[in-house]
Length: 258
Image (tube, rainbow, N blue to C red; front, side, top):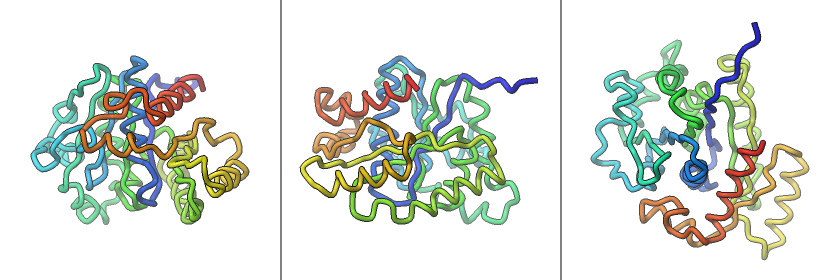
């Protein structure tokens, strides 16, 4: 019998380099898809909890977080929080998550905690977007095991491709061992400065290397984008007419049209 593709898609935003726009992408792509009236859940599985604070939630007061869900002490539906956008919800993170790797490192099925809980609710959503930490440890393996695809943000800077082979081999290993259907959804160029030759040069290198996997939309370096998280808002609620807002809305359209 042919395997029926589920209507929902789980997408990990991953890159073990910090500061490449992972959280910015998780929040603003999620908000853009929600504005397009898709039911979206953002799952913050970074112990730094940047997606949580970027959506205006105080991480120090969070009790029902993704850690307590993965430990099975809180049912997953109890941890899902509403947001100001009708179709957007979030499961927050907190510092507690930092304990997860130590507690589960030697467990044979330690990679399945996130998949097992997300499977309970994935049919409630069109898209589940996982904001993963800047590392290739057990938390990121959980994200990749739970996902249908990986979106990789890459900053258009001198060392952009450095370390990327580690991420690709982690994706390959996860595919071989835990999740045969896992694919690279796309490569997203971020923090692009069209005034510099370097940005254009790096863009050329990445498009040569990844070919059609690179989105045509490029996320510009944009002051409004970097300000929005401190107001606890996605860019669309902070500065709808900004270049950053338009870029993420275009990315959502590109993803929906594919």
